[in-house]
Amino acid sequence: MNPLLKLSLRGHKSSVSCIARVQDDLVSADRDGWVVLWNLTTKRPRALWKAHQGQILTLKYTAMGLLTHGRDSELRLWNLSESSLRGCSSDVSVVGNEEEPKKPQYEELPVNALNFCNVDFWELPSEGLKKNALVVTPASVDSDNFDVYKISSDGSTFAIQRVIENFAIRSAQLIKLDLEEINDPDLILKQRGHGIVMRLRFISENLLFVGYESGALFGLDIRPLVRDLVKKADRLVVNTGYKVTLKCALKGHTPLPMLSLEYDNDSKVILCGSASKKILRVDLSPLLASSNDVIESHKSADSNITSKEDHANSRENSGAVPDPTLNKWGLKQPTTQKPATRSTSDFTGLESPGFEESNSNAASTSELESQVSFTNLKHYGIQCVQFVTGGYAVAFWDGTIKVINNDQETTSTWERAEEALQALNVVDNPSGPTKKSICIFSWRAKSSDERQIVPVQTRIRTRETLADKLLLFVGHGDGLIRAYSLSETVC
Image (cartoon, rainbow, N blue to C red; front, side, top):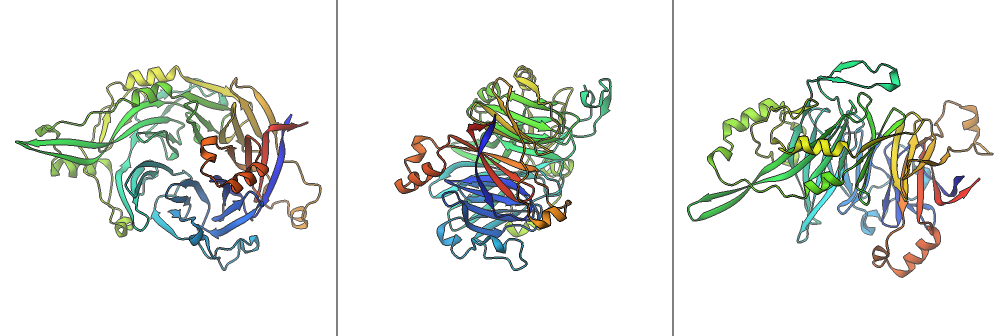
């Protein structure tokens, strides 16, 4: 039994790379850098524009606007207000034209896009009218590391501050790996690092997970480093940057690169996919419970004050160098501590300014390992994962899609069927765009509380169009987007 096809959206002329939700509508992006904002009531574009000069790697709707991150090494936040979208084209015939249509208003930040890693965004508590957020990106000077920026906006001004710079995770241990895929369980690899960053995902304001080319998965606690400086009757609270604490280290898919990383806030479960047939499932409940214990502020002591000399040594040892492309933003470099060089376990050592090893790291990793499990999906190449009601959906390299329930049983398997009628250029050009699935996106119905803030007429139209509790949108290599109802099936 396979899910019922509900609708199709045609607007892209190249492979669909990302799909996201914008309130009651949908937004999609492709490998040529185009973005299409869809009206799901009419199944037609509301607006479309060329957002990047190259593939779009990240697409996420945030409180500050629509975040896009492209292979042109730019991160942009687009204003999707009615006034900003006014004048934008909704004609799909302009997609791919040399003369680009009008764009909405946006702010941008230059970042690293030498690899295909995503970026992630986490909204922080607002300060009056000012909205704040953290954005994690591959480091601007080294694809093996990452940067974290704090972004603030009051609606008229936009401020950016880099709070964690070029953070590195190093490994210099011999690791024995069970390599089922290449039939060599006794192979020992000597790793001089974990390769480039492949996946970044905020789990909470203070918990970040990083997946690497080596297949390793790290959980890091990141918090503002606040010190109380007391001198006689005076007291001064100083924010001296961010502190990074290793919470857990898992081999994950080693030595295969991590291709997908997804988290479900309801079940507190994280899923990781690679080129192998197995999907990694980790229950983060124990880790999240321990992360709720707030790290106390450091009390004043001479040993806690970082000297200018220590700060200089810290930057030198971390390998961080000034980035002239960011000077126009006036990015403030946070004060950092002298780097720690202790090994956290037999598996990994971390070296970066502001890093501190958690005393409970060994216990946290050991406790978390009991929550780790692998499921053999009997299909290679797990390129995209999405949580759905009662389980999760997986898209594979060859275009196959599977739905797995919470008992780790496959309930549906399908791939796109050939159309009865095909365009002549497709028939004559077999080397043209592939029809295989490239990305998937799970559409969940809003709760009753969320619907209350939506105008009545909009709610009626939405119910008529998206009456399903759950839709799975699938983006294909030829630009087609299809939506399947996982609550209705066909033989």
